[in-house]
Amino acid sequence: MSEQKKPLSALQKDLFTDSRLSVCDVSSPSAHQEQNLTNLTDRYVKALQENSNNRFDESLPVLTAFRIFDVTALPNRSDMGFKDYGVKDVQILAEHFFQGEPEEKKNEKKEEHLSEWQKLKYNFLQMREDIPPEIAKPTNNMLTKSSTEWLLKRMLSTHSTYQHLFPEMLCIAEVCLSLPVSNAWSERGASAIKGIKTRMRSGIKDDMLEALMQISINGLKVKELECTGVVKESVKQCLKEKPRKKLMAKKTATGNHNTSTVSTNDVAVQVEISETEGEEPENIDDSDVVQTEKEDQLQLEVNAAIELMNLNCY
Image 1: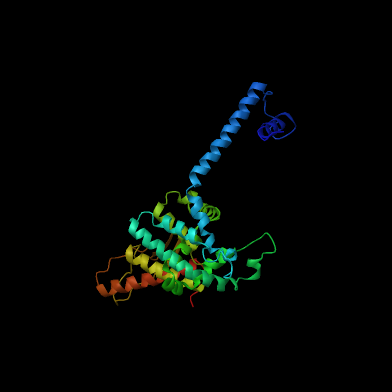
Image 2: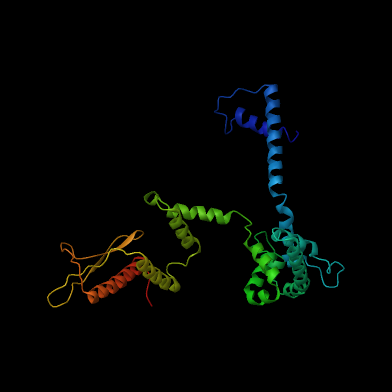
């Protein structure tokens, strides 16, 4: 059976046997209809291939050039190809990332990249000896980290050194490490949106949604000690920039004012500071009292936010 006939044969099997589509009331296609379906499938596959090639043809040489960071493919110093290894790839990368620059500056950048690469190769030879065995020669199909990823992270871990000696190549290494190799990050973002923009919060604005997604995906874990300080500082900054419901105190004849209570309606929405029920707050003109009220309000709201998020102050 030819490759062109396989899709049509699979469709017929699903339609006219006790299979998935057997309940559909579809008559057997005629020879002319079969030929039309075969031609349509063939045109569709070809159009899909052409579209994919047109979209990625220009990117393929650049992506291939990043193989210079695969330290396991680097020839030994005694090999004939060591001297010229990676030269063409570095030129392709320099041409791509500086294509908008004037020709003179572009040529200078190419020379800088090539000069750094000729020195960087020797560093890679030394670093290759430090690759963990499970990365250099993986024993199973569940490869957690490639040799390229290991090398790039090793370079960025000593960023200050490489920034001084190989600034141009370090920039390309950062670009290479940031390239997504799967759709895991986009899927993770979609999951975060579902948890943040719920039915009760469907009116949330894009800038707030983006900020909450950044916190959800890249933020600290809630119960970490470092998170406690971040939350406290965030609450203080928020209260400074945008006035919330103010803590109103009732001034007595002795100059004392009532204690305030903290009530919480929704952890995800707000922390409300209110007076004892049934009492009408009064505006205080005395500047010292108002300043004290603001400080009390700030501290109460910070404590309430920490308590609501199950944080412990140390």
